[in-house]
Amino acid sequence: SRKEESWKLLVTIEECDYKRGYLNGTMHADGFHSAGQEDHQVVTFWEGEIVDIVNHSFLTSKWGASQEIDRSYWLKFPPFFEISDMAMETEGRKLDLASHPYIFIRLKEKHFISEEAAGNLTIAGFYYMCISRSTGNIIGYYCDPNSNPYQKVRLQVVWEGSAGHTSACCDVA
Image (cartoon, rainbow, N blue to C red; front, side, top):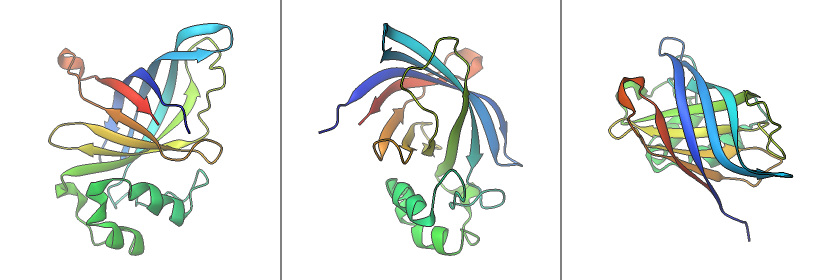
């Protein structure tokens, strides 16, 4: 039985370039426990790929992800079911994702920004994510061969003025 954890997560998008299918930002996670420290914050810088078929397909082709791993993670998202065959077999070349009600991205934490050590936390893996265009809500799964598979992340939009921050409670199961 896996222990379920929960912490506050603030994800900020600093840059979004639709022409390149690229985005980046920071992730602030509060409530982590590590040896000798209670409830400290971990801050990471991340880069993301927007699956737009022009710049990035559903096939990751890096970070240790095979086509089988990609398929198993993308199939966790109900909006992917209806397009899965076309998305994986033709690398999505026949899909029009610009009008799809969901945006699919991969997010990779690149380095820690926070001063204190992250304890036993790792950023070796990456996230598969699905964003609802209508609500902004995000469901994601962390993929790391050295961690429990399919660690789920749920984010709900919290508008904080014109800064446009997205934050939420994150449950990892």
